[in-house]
Image (cartoon, rainbow, N blue to C red; front, side, top):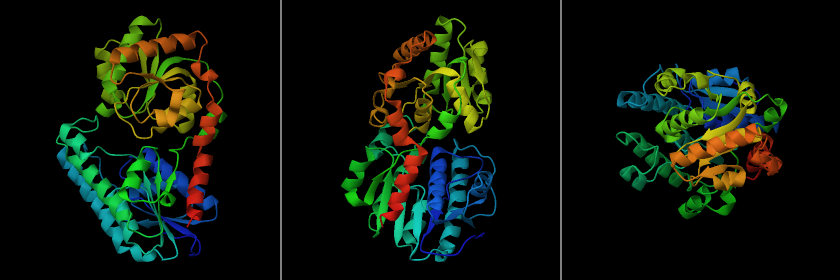
Length: 400
């Protein structure tokens, strides 16, 4: 355990046992930003996390202290197969158990923040002595009915992972509600009715944005348009990867000198498929890029395509919009409450409609017409900037 600073009642403990390997997701970025906000407002910050967390923590030069909850980083494994899932479960349990053994370091007059509703973060937050408890609710997992019927895109295979997520989320939300002096941060408007139905009070709930680095988006200068389409994401059925590739092939066949850029380490997984579709000369792979380079590539593109079959609070759409980049997406239920009319929606899972709209938007932007020029982007940027998100988190701390 490393420490810094004197102990005081203005100390916030972030329980962050979900980080493993090189994996770093949107939820991880969110609580890193919340920790920065707390520290800048005068709170001391301590993290409970493993060696993988330590690697990211040191790379980002975050302030505070760290209570280590494991002895090494989990080797690379195949999370799509049962042995890999079991190994990951055992790895999480190890950090959870070591957290329980060190809960006495959290005092009654301090704060605790569960960085997810997973049991390995939520149970320690529920059990510790801290009298002021906060938990963040990032994404609604599939319901039991959706799992049984496989009616949501992120339910696949044996369904074991989906059952696990559903059970963890439902148990933790129900257990957390019995704690006194608690707050739940929720990232999507649809989550609030569910929390109220579970028995939470209005005063215990706080909406908070997924957060967008609007300052960085404004710092990156405007770029010459090089790419017609840009995409970033995981190679997963939920992300609509097949629909994306079909759309790229369709538009490449119809738009002269079409070019697309796929951001991330994707070539190994998608290179052969791109070749089979005959669009290798039209599609580039960026490899891993910095946040600044990501925004530069956004501004170098004409249209962002979001063919996901399901999403929670997709920050990447917010980042694209912050760059003034038109977005084409399926009209899934979670988007309009967050983005309103800032997206060009097409009927859900209608690939032909997606292809037609992407082609239309590419040609319009090539002609100098961007529909976002008539929209109130400044309001959207202000409401979802990290600065506004920081303020909401700190108001939550001060609300106890």
